[in-house]
Amino acid sequence: MEAKDFIRAQIVADLDSAKHSKIITRFPPEPNGYLHIGHAKSICLNFGVALEAQGECNLRFDDTNPEKEEQEYIDAIKRDVTWLGFQWAGNVRFASDYFDALYDYAVQLIKMGKAYVDSQSAEEISKGRSTLIGDGLNSPYRERTIEENLALFEKMRLGEFNEGDCVLRAKIDMASSNINLRDPVLYRIKKVEHHQTGTKWLMYPMYDYTHPISDAMENITHSLCTLEFEDHRPFYDWLLDTLATPAHPQQIEFSRLNLNYTVTSKRKLKKLVDEGVVSGWDDPRMPTIAGLRRRGYTPESLRDFCDRIGISKNDGVVDFGLLEFCIRNHLESSAPRAMAVLNPLKVVITNVGDEVLTLNSACHPNLPELGTRDIPFTQEIVIDAADFSENPPKGFKRLVLGGEVRLRHSYVIRCDEVIKNEAGEVVELRCSADLNTLGKNPEGRKVKGVIQWVSATQGIAAEIRLYDRLFSEVDPEAGEGFLDCINPEAFKVVSALVEPSLAMAKPEDRFQFEREGYFVADLKDCTDSKLVFNKTVALRDSWGVKE
Ligand code: ATP
Ligand code: MG
Image 1 (cartoon, protein in one colour):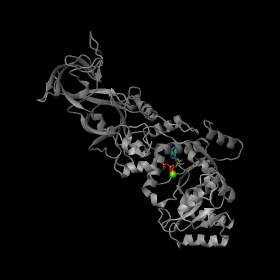
Image 2 (image 1 turned 45 degrees about the vertical axis):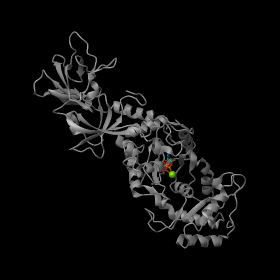
Image 3 (image 1 turned 30 degrees about the vertical axis):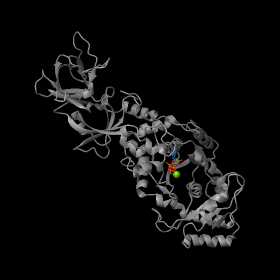
Image 4 (image 1 turned 90 degrees about the vertical axis):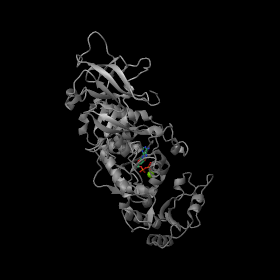
């Protein structure tokens, strides 16, 4: 295992010193939304470290807020982790698997005089804890006897109180400079059903209490989490030092992934879904793993991205362009090429007959193993309307009246005539082909431009969904205004004509549409009877560059 960051260095040291013989990590999502690109960083770290150290990584759902959690999220998270290419050890685990143990540990704390039932209101408790200067205020209930606390905690368990009547708190130090040690709440009453434990529990343990014990129950060696938990570490250690748990994992913090033009907060992403700003958690504009997948990102590209950003304690903002670079890089060397015309303009080749000429071309210039495809050439073809200009700007290398251009994989043609409708719009071009230019340069002149085309009669209609970045602001999370900086141009649908070899495209097949970008057959909507492609990314980084 290579010590390529401070966490891996610690693990290597712990293996070398024989502190641990087997490394066990965990990825602990709360099933209250879909995973996003930030979670991918944590997944790649936890599962990656385990793989490199020939250890194990558990998938554990931190399910202590039943009212916000759902089976749909559990299923989606499992699917996303698997799709990213990782396998958790054994069965999926739930913090709720440990509710009995957590309860027993809480009783132990009470018996040790280290926990008490507090009958103050939530407001009083938080006021007492969070006096910014000086010590916190002791609760008037802090000195309840062990017997009284045991009896009250039992009543909490049996549902004899209402929500908010009381909580169980650890008894640590109200004068601590770390607010997390000022008698944190361990249990609160919630008379709600739980997706795993049904109606068994009427009170639920807090995350900060549940997490260390769950880690210990699973013999986790290194509990890797993001920097905001640094201040929680003293309580993590206090709890595991105080209780005789099976293990005392080491919590190590690293910085979160922040990505510009993106929000990485499940709560905010849920808002986009709930308010109908996007079509769902897997909308191809979403920075969720499911959304990136539908957009055409590959697991390899996301893993490569996580590898490149690395692990540190520095809170930086990563440029969205790096993510795009990673997918472009992967698809450049793996996606077969095809021709698609997104904005068709009819072209009639006047000097060929109405028979179909079958041309053939490699699916990928450098990957002969991807084979070849047939490309039918016919009298009527379409080209992209933008590839013809009546008033060509300086340096325009494509088709103009009287000019020549190479049809990709086919002949050089010359535009002889422009046909317009009554509104004066160009509706058709009449061209002649130089029939001596198949696979060779024309004699005596140079033709610079190459344009893509599709047979008008043999091509297939396809719906193409053009996506761009969801937010128009570099930092959409600045303030609460992320809903105000949605990029209205981020989703457009066009009717295209694509080469017939694409008829075979199956959901999630990826292609480079020559000169247009990388596209993926939509996971949900691309069927045998209707082709639907999503634009994954442009061929080049043109963000902010006007064409
Ligand atoms: P959110 O704020 O989006 O709800 P969270 O941290 O509350 O995120 P969890 O489901 O609790 O979401 O996260 C599971 C794991 O993923 C945690 O260990 C968390 O630290 C990590 N994680 C979440 N967001 C990021 C991020 N942006 N970068 C790196 N790791 C992250
Ligand atoms: Mg969380």
